[in-house]
Image 1 (cartoon, rainbow, N blue to C red):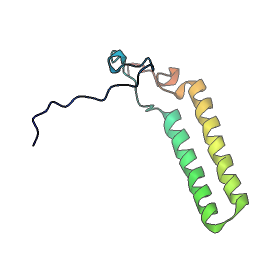
Image 2: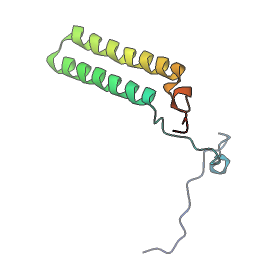
Image 3: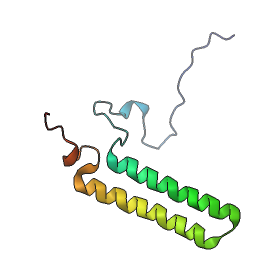
Length: 96
């Protein structure tokens, strides 16, 4: 076994990126909100529909699955604008 020190790979020259430039002072969050969960759930259903349509070779059902996925995006955007996204007004703790 080698006793050589291990170091992280260096970024490509000229990219302007440095591993030390990452700001960790603000939490990034993980989209844990009703809007995000609804979007993911609807899009998963759309992906399931598309997968089944692919297996049975039905273009109409495949397109319908794509429409369901697009509807999931629209629902998520609308819910975020309505205050159900991360930090949204409907999710603020009212003190109860």
